[in-house]
Image (cartoon, rainbow, N blue to C red; front, side, top):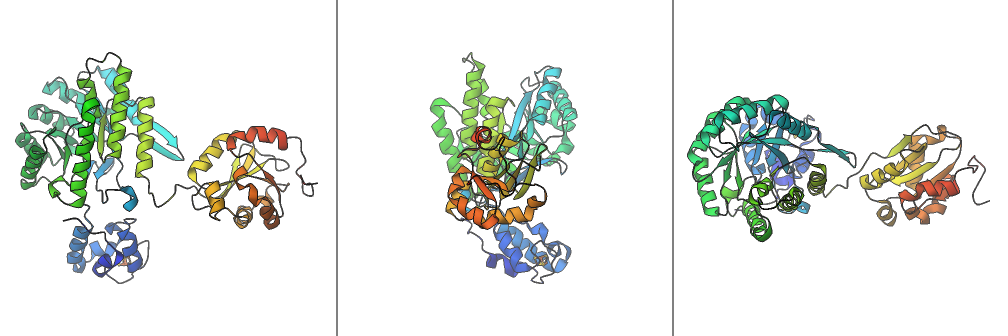
Length: 480
Ligand code: SF4
């Protein structure tokens, strides 16, 4: 049965209704509203867990709030990744909750120094994008040799090099157990149970209490049978992989992923309400004829991008190479941000370099993160001030049209930032896209207003022509 969308009144009757003030919302109805929107979690209401009289209601709430796609945790409380846990098929229906995790694959045929270097690359991968640090999540250790002692040695080296969550990749149960013994306290994901090994792999998952992937390429019925059998054994932390392909096979890959997630979310097949694992890295096995590795890397990145869009919760990739991995982490970020909240930065004053209070330029922009960081990249090497207006995370053009970037808001940020106590002149440079507010801003602020370029990349040229060598002290005006 599909789960119905929860409203506050589904939740409120089951809360303590004491308005004790221990949650961020302070009152139970406010908490119910935020819980329905998944902005808080049940753990934010301590009385539910502390007082035994709420035990029954807590169990009901946990069942009510359980996502149709099970959330599976890989790793330890110190460093872990959550995958799945999704509530909706389309992100604008609420938002996606746990971003696709990226695991970079190393194997037991790599030389030790090469192995360590690659693991450190994964650990150190970082790209700052509109104020956020985008990183990789996991290391997957694959047994290529099928030699248990080689696998054990490789897993040990990886575990010594990083505390990132791990995937152990082998279809041979005895090889898997050798590696698993080394990291049994790290709660790795076991990849994978197949039609041939599922009983042995299931026993390992039970014995070591680890999550397990069921891999059944192009055979949904087999996948469901294995998942059902493992669930009856009491193994709940399962993930599923139906295989993937490029070229001719890409249509089937995308269709399978879509059908899996629809069945899971809509509850038409509860067996399939599990996180999906994708292995674009296997293109390197399938494309052995291709002599140019950059072509395979490109295909791998394209396939991975499509799989991010099509609900894959964990991707296994061959490398942390910047040109192929960076687009993927940005795509993931864009899909998994909250569509209800524009990405924004704090409004207020920013100071760049060592501005001279007598004549340093003062720019104004909106607090939409993309606009802010674009402007920042164009002015951060100058000695200047930047006033960031609270436009509720919308760009300048939209904010002007929607009356979120107004003369009063500019006056407000001038006042709240106390910039008038810091500088001697009273001339402000507004974005070209806010040109029509020039007169209103002058009236509201009593500052002189210069209309800057349409695009912040034009700021250096604009300053040369309109600012440098000019007098901006009070009483002076461009209009005179
Ligand atoms: S902590 Fe729980 S009981 Fe207290 S106000 Fe919040 S929701 Fe109500």
